[in-house]
Amino acid sequence: MFQKVLLAYDGSEHAKRAAQLAQAIALKFGAELRVVTAFNPISRLLGNPALEQAIQRETTQANTSAEEIAAELRAAGLDPHIEVLEGPPADAVLRVAETRQSDLIVMGSRGLGNAAALFLGSVSHKVLQSAECPVLIVK
Ligand code: ATP
Ligand code: MG
Image (cartoon, rainbow, N blue to C red; front, side, top):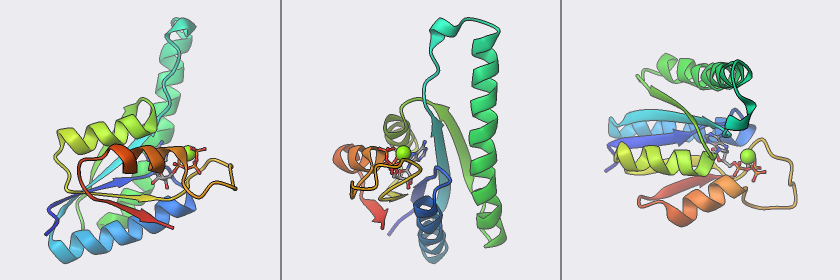
C-alpha cells in the first residue's frame, strides 16, 4: 500500500515517535524511507564569509540530527535516504514529498517549538493542509 514513506524529522520527542511509526510502516510494506530535515532560511544580507559559515553550521547540525535517526533506522534493517534542505520547514517537507512522489508523510504533531498551548505546530499544520498524499501525525 505504501511504497515511499517520508519522515519529517526535527529531532524532537514527537519526531522520534513519528520515526518509530515510519520505521514500522516501511518494514511492514517494504517501502523506501526518506528522512527530511530542514533548517530555516539564512538571510542573504549577511554576506560572505558569515553567510557561508552560517549555512555550513546549519547544514552540519541538521545532518547530525538526521543521521542520528538514520542510524536507528539502519539498525532496524532499513536503508533510509536523507535530505537536508534550507527553507521554511513545511515548504521543504512538501517539496520533497512532491519531487520524490512520497505516498505517506509521517510527522509529529508538535516539534521543538515551545507554544505548548497549541495542539498542532505550524509545520504539521501547514503540511497537513497542503500535502497531496496522506499525512500521519503522531501525538
Ligand atoms: P512551531 O515550530 O510552529 O513553533 P512546534 O515546533 O511545536 O511548533 P512543528 O514545528 O509543527 O511544531 O513540528 C511538528 C512536526 O513537524 C515535528 O514533529 C516534525 O515531524 C516536523 N518538523 C518540524 N520542524 C521540522 C524541520 N525543520 N524539518 C523537518 N521536519 C520538521
Ligand atoms: Mg517547530
